Image 1 (cartoon, rainbow, N blue to C red):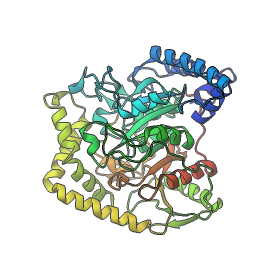
Image 2: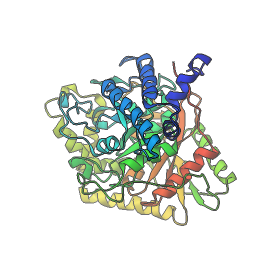
Image 3: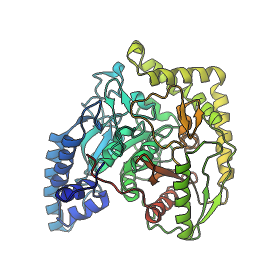
Image 4: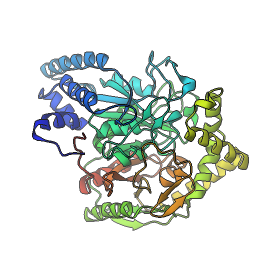
Amino acid sequence: MTQVDTTSKQEYSLAYLSATETLAKFRALEISPIEVLETQIQRIEQRNGDRETGINAFTETLFDSARTKARLATEQYVQLARDCETPPALLGLTVATKEKHGIAGLKLEQGLAAHRGRIADDDHPVVERINAAGGIIHARTTSPEFSCATTTHSPMWGITRNPWNTKTSPGGSSGGSGAALAAGFTTLATASDIAGSTRIPAGFTGTVGYKAPYGRIPGLGALAADWYRGDGPMGRTVADTALLAAVMSGRHLADHRSWGRNGLNPLLDGDVSGLRIGLSLTLGDYPVSNEIQDNTIQVAKALEAAGAMVVPVELPWNTSRITETTFAHFGHILGPAMRKETEGFESELARYTEQFIADATAAATRHTLVDSLEMDRQLQAELASAMEGLDALLCPTSAVASLDAAEDYLDGLTIDGKHLRHYWEGHMTSPFNVANRSPVVAVPSGLSSEGVPTGVQVVGHPFDESMAFRVAAAVEKHAPGPTFQIFE
């Protein structure tokens, strides 16, 4: 990890420009889509590396088609400037899409040997909307098998590493997206989240991730009916993430659960004066690393200095109960689906996939689906009570400061000397998939002693996306996270 040198300043500038800055420069004809794309392709070719020791953020690249689209977008900006017309929302911006977001005619394998060679019949709604808005999909990002781990590695795609510290993981399951953003390989990225798979990578890579209220962003297929689940955007800034959320969100014919108008226009001026923001450092009894707590407190102090009233919040939660709640749910939906999809390929599964299926199966023997609904209801009621009279809730994203890039964590993990039985207990995200009508924006909070970013979550009341983004923008403005560097 090195600071940018003088010979790399132009490369650094173009590769790491925010989406909003890039669009402004495109419109002013100061830079072109093909210039940005070629800069990011050069970075990918020089720095992405191999599947064992490199950043390894992608399952495949689509450079030829991306170059064609970038040249067309470059010409389109000239014409639009001449005609004084407004360009499509993402025109010319690079977007790396998570492999699970299928592209018609391309592979849709989800890291599973059982799916090797499977081809997508249709574009995922997220892909369809990015293309319609003029975005350029130039690469597809890695995830663990079936997106079911908090690290990103698989027998099919190898190990994905964190550009901030390549001994560590970018998190999971959208780890390839987080790594690609942090490394300057893309301007925007897509993700998905059933227990934190967008927010955990955002926290570990110093990026921004958004878990929308259930159904706000359309999904595809039977498992999109899982009410813990959702697709979402990632970016390097809150405004960039809101921009992509605006394109992705809204009612779609392919998903009758989807709702609302396309487009999201939150207030991003960072004004929190007069707001009441709850602060929970541990969400009950999560053993949060001291340095993560310290970074979260600094964020809270910055919000207070900006005029917000920060109110301590107590929640009657514990990690074992939350894990039992989520796996009771998984035991009746995701676990059986994974078992069905991998039948006959059990010998080729990663150990964390075997463990997930086993844990979900065991939970289903302890709890009926109706039991799990009651467990969900109780947790949701407790969150509603804790947030009464508040505008939003602030808490850390993960309790642990980093994860080893290649580790399975089948025996749990240890935080500041305390061992947790299950690795999911190291992350503070899944309660808000149980309460999945609440919007959550994950934003950076600082840097750990290992050189890995830390993050916080801004949790809104059900469906109140504008407030979640408003407070997240204030965090970014008044307590900015670590500055991106060129990673060698």
